Image 1 (cartoon, each protein chain N blue to C red):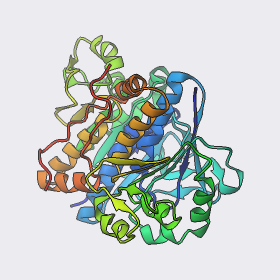
Image 2 (image 1 turned 90 degrees about the vertical axis):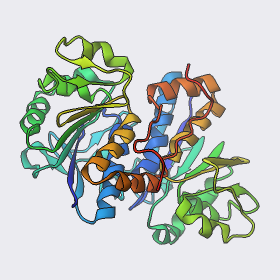
Image 3 (image 1 turned 60 degrees about the vertical axis):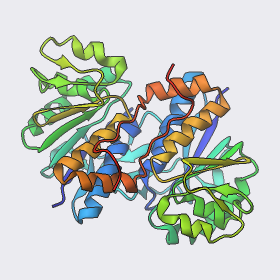
Length: 197
Length: 197
């Protein structure tokens, strides 16, 4: 069985937040045959990621087909993201339709604004944990790479989206399937220069 | 000091091969102030990545400014990549100009075709190691996450580009700088489901 994965994109989105997961999903679909990974925005005009990369969305909110998984990536421009009322409304409207609603990095703040994290466990990028924790109904699990609560999965910053997406395709298919995807991604990470500052 | 990083993109390129490094480079530039990360293709028409994502290149081969670093990402469509004679010629023409010429995944095969890996150590995606090793002048180091020989740095498949790019910004700036970039990427990988198949 293959799935349709929808990726919300917008100006100043962090590209790696969504490309890590989208390539994971695309390889998963390729292994099982079928499915698709589509990008979605307010409208189909090109958007510019924080790195400067320009991406043309496949669908606008108005014409998105039914989705199995929806992913909300993050940005350093959280204030601008949270002012996108059409996005907040659209994500809220799709939350119960999808098998999994997922966020990477500061994308969790949009889920919070849409009221979808109330009384749930969640995580986000380390820089924004206080913002998320300011909502007393959210149980922040800042040290977790990703957190699943019901059909909502939030993950830590940027690269954490890869770990989350691998976990997700393992849930949708099987752990062995996820291991095959991981092997194709050659995801045997070896960060250089030792411990973090 | 900030740098101009050029990313070669083309139809059927694996998005994560170049977005891992390009976001790493962009955050590095942001920390030091200045610089840019630009995408480059045969012409500036949009290209479609293997996941379906559509990216509009910033520059064509004809109008690329001077680069400090050039990155060649990979694809499953290696045959089509190696038939892009204009790309092979262009990469060869830029090889001595740049501080570092880098590849991710099967991008190494383009460097090989351009004659740039002769008598060098190199690596690539595990599926293509035999193709690279068929050139007897190349010393294949298949188990290395990334391999530096002179000003050329080749890396293993897909996600290995993140490790390579972090190493690179550590060389261009300092190990502590690379650790700061890593912290912003929150690159503390934790692949799920244990050992590979």
